[in-house]
Length: 93
Image (cartoon, rainbow, N blue to C red):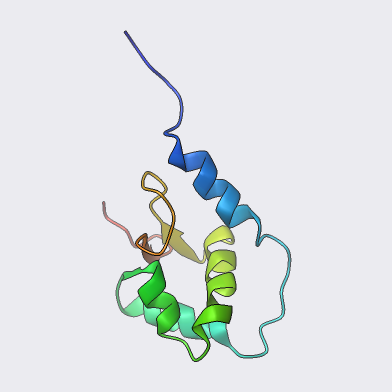
């Protein structure tokens, strides 16, 4: 028997990321802070946004950076606070 298709969490993860596909202003420079942190090492999503000055607002910008492929996340696992975030092109797993 051969079973094909995406794992259940993949479409849910893509849907969660796609909500931030529209352009956004970043007057607080949160995207720069997020990119600077993720370039140093991979982070869990919640830990990554906590590296910024305004974590609650940074969550939205982090999702946007993931959608724009400026950062990467493994969608074979459910997307959430425990998801690992990597520099774009920097995950070897």
